[in-house]
Length: 403
Picture 1: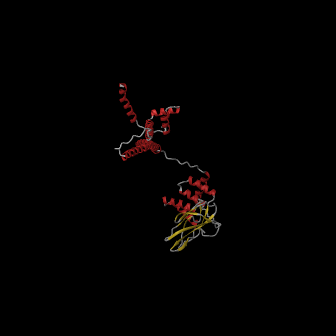
Picture 2 (picture 1 turned 90 degrees about the vertical axis):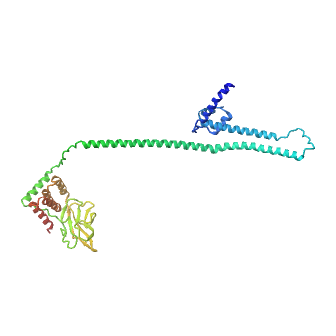
Picture 3 (picture 1 turned 90 degrees about the horizontal axis):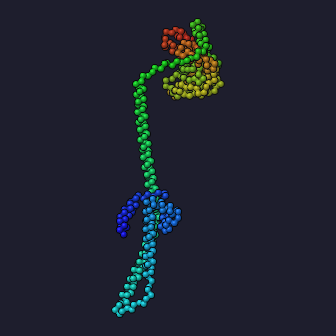
């Protein structure tokens, strides 16, 4: 007894520690049927031994086992009380005592009625206790346990979300630190570049392959100019029609191309703006009368969409609205330069870039009157006293106006 008394406080402490241990449900926890089987049959199989081993390390299952065992014990006790109450209702076989004359029958009847009432009251109470215990167990298994499971699942999900948020915060902080380090590195690099002297790169040299054939023709053309024998190429406009756009009168004057060859097979067409006119439209036709598609670059400028056929003559006019009336330009013509001559002039443009006199002479020799005028005017602008450039410009303009 003394040894048991000495160990009692220790057992109480151990029991209190076991009850205070946090009970957390896990997917490995035992089902209610498994707990009932352990209570009723004990560890009578290897599976039961495994369940007992799990319960020894799981506070949640130990508490469930203890509560279920208490509930079943109360149910068994209620059954015993019900059986005892039922046995007390059986009458004893002994002789009934003879009532004395002083006893009132009504009083005995009342006593008997009172005993029957308490017996009837006690028996339903035992049944009610048993039913309540069973109902409480069913309610627990059907309602409380699922709610506990759901609550534990939600807590686990909440914990996972918290851990993910912590990880995301850590990643954001790391990314911000990397960005700060990168910006510091860029600032240091810019500082070093700013303090370092910039090396002077040598000028790029443009290598132009000299075309001897182009050079020979340029020399011949310049010799003819010096000898006074140079004449611009006549623009062969096969059919009848005005070569220079005609006199616009009160109509629209055409700028270019007019009575000339053109180097580009998608030339740009320009008209001179007319005061008060609007809604300009261009009409380009080939020698067969077919319409040529154009795209509008500005109110008075258009460019041909598809490449034109080289060596062919094209006509074009412009119309617009002025004061509610339709005004038109004279008909102008141009011819697209042949491919062989166009390739030759492209090489000359690269070989003699910036040499206005040479390029102007080559353009005039090929019939590109608009391009020749542009080069001679550029030379006169740079050197107004250049008499040769002035004479060549007059020859080009005269050729454009010739019938």
